[in-house]
Length: 431
Image 1 (cartoon, rainbow, N blue to C red):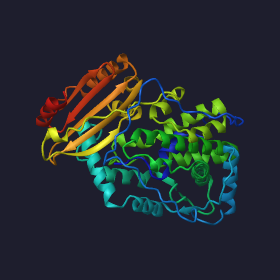
Image 2 (cartoon, helix red, strand yellow; image 1 turned 90 degrees about the vertical axis):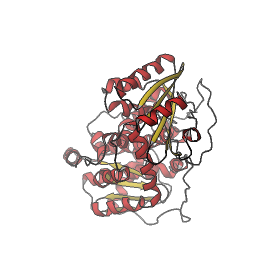
Image 3 (spheres, rainbow, N blue to C red; image 1 turned 60 degrees about the horizontal axis):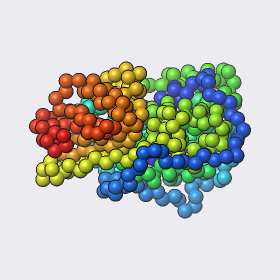
Image 4 (cartoon, one colour; image 1 turned 90 degrees about the horizontal axis):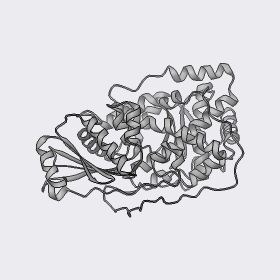
């Protein structure tokens, strides 16, 4: 399932994370130089063409998006965002204020086709077999429930539609939300955010990195906007509004909550580092040469030179049996592994056990009643791979339906199964 957002959204979790009284650095002048992405020391294997891994077609409206002008109060926020980002809008933007009920309907309509439901069911099987969500989780419903309680606004790069929960006479918190989405619109006009939709659907970690870049810029810009353009009393109102929102529903597994929150937590820290290094121009350069892994987002010092290797798990469908079919392929990055470890281990151990990641992928197969998953990860050194393997064994505990295998000096394979019969078969095939 493509959990990553097709539309860039602001969630309630994002506003809570980005306190308006934090330590975001001041904006410094734009540098004249540009960053250039270079390949690291590990060789990159050409990516395979796979029917489960395909780009999402993007169809921009022929008229260039919605026409119209912003109400004066909206236009004022847009001008303030331009000043903070040192960019100007290239074409008019139209923002629509809607009720919570209308927002929920819009989010439901965007995900209402049958394909996302089927994709979510396949992902649910794989994730439950790995152990990051409970068995029987309706992942499609969980995402919908999260959106219904947490999404405050969105900007869709494909249609250039900007929507936020509010009114045409927005209060401080609604203008804070608007500044976030207006940042997305500004970035889109200069750097074309449909880059996200053109990434293959199995390049999940690269998608996560790009969303972290975009959401990080929008969070930092909106916080700078709030400090610059709101009074002390209005800042207090924004913080109170952010803190009074509902938590994610119980139907949303903790792993999914953390996955949704990641861009709003790691993204701003990445953007702050860029600002310290080169001001708004460094952010512009990052959009021109985006981070290609969540490792680069989590460790800005590794951007842009430390690039991942492409890891490909062998397709075991034919060896598993005639009725087995491939149901899922996912790029496994440092973020994903850190969130996995964080379900059962301390945050310190979770970060350490997933550090110095070099690349990763899992593939999942099912015959309807049984599910098998193989996850291969590459590491920067034998020490890093051994640490990951040790952490994975600790995470699995005495589980009898999963096994950790060290298949090379810097390559670790973990196999997961829905039952003992399948793990026995998978050990024989992939061990």
